[in-house]
Amino acid sequence: MNFKHYFGLLALIFLLNSCSDDEDCCVIPPDEEKEAFEDGIFVLNEGNFGSGNSSVSFIDEETGEVQSQIFNSVNGTSLGDTAQSIYLSEELAFIILNVSNTIEIVDRNTFETIGRISGNLQNPRFATVSGNSLYVSNWGDATNPDDDYIAVFDLNDYSLTSSIAVAEGPEKIVANNGSVYTAHKGGYNFNDIISVINTSTNEVSTEIEVGDVPTSMIVDGSNLIVLSAGKPSYADVETAGSLSVVDLNMNTVLSTAEFPTSSIHPGDLIKSDESYYFTVGKAVYEYQSGGDLPSGPKFRMEEVASLYGFNAKDGMLYAASANASFTGNGQVFVYDASNGSLLNTYEAGINPNGVYFN
Image 1: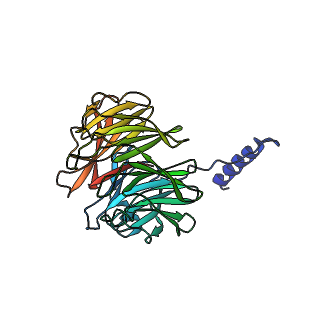
Image 2: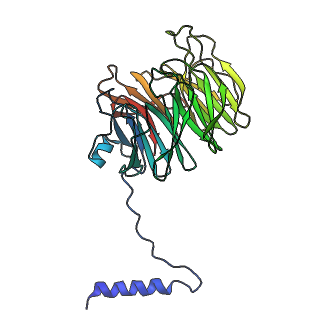
Image 3: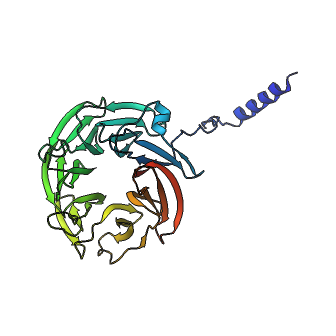
C-alpha cells in the first residue's frame, strides 16, 4: 500500500468533515512570492547630461542589498538621458527623462516596461495623475519664456489629449480635488506663481502669487504649503526664501512668512508624520504646520557632498548625495529625524536626485 497517499486521503477527509454546512471552507495557499521590487526604495540617478546614462537603483532595507540599473536589467535596454523625476501611481511608475524627452512607464513592482511616451514632450520635468489623465510639466525651449506648457495624456492609451499653455518654468505639480497645481520656478529665469488648472476644462483657472522661485508644494488638508527658495545671489536682486499657506478652496494666500535674511534659500520641503522638514544647504530645519518659521536648523548632514534629493518616511530622512565631481556614483544617507544621527548609507548611481518609496 502507498502510505503517503493513504495519509493524504485521511487528511483530506478530516479537512472536509471539519467544515460545517453553513461555513465557507477553503485551503489557504502558501504565500505568493513577492514581486522583485514590491517593497523597498527606488533611487533615481540623473546621470550625466548628454551621456544617456540615467538609471534607477533599488534598496531593500531589510537585507541592505542595493541593486543598480534595474530598468536596464529587467528590460535589456538603457533608460535614457537625464532622468528628472519619478511619479508613482497605482501599479505604475512614470519615469520622466528630461533630455530624452520621453516618459518610460513600468510596472512599479516588476519594473517591466508597460509603455513609453515619446512625443509631445519638450524638456519634461514632473508629473501627476488626476482622474484618468497624466499631467506633465514642460519647459519647452528653455531659452523661450513663452512656450512652456502642461501636456495631458490619456492613461488608457497614453495619447495626448491637451496641451495647456502656462507661465514660464513649470516644475513640481500636484493634483487635488479637480485641480492641478504647478509651481513655476521660472526655467532659465525666475518666477513666483502657482498656476491652477481646472481638470474638467484643462484650462488655467487662476494664478496664485507666492514667494520668488517656489520649489516645493504639499497638500495639507484644505491648504497647500508652498516653500519658495527666493532669488539667488547671482540674480539682479537677491531675495529671501519664504513659506506660504494657500487656501485650496479659495485659491488665495492665507499667510506668507519670509526668512530673515536674503541669503537664506530653502528647498526640498517634505512631510514626515506631523512635521515638515526642509533644507538650507546641508542643514535640516523642522517646521510645524501653523507655527513660526524655525529660528535655526535641527541638525546638519555633514556626510552629504552635494544634496540632490530629499525625502522622508517613518521618522527617517533620506538624503541623495551626488559626489563632489558630479561624475561618479553617489550615495543615499539615512538620518533619524528626531536627532539627526546617521542610521545607514547606501551606494547609488551617478547623480542620485530622488528617493521614492514603493
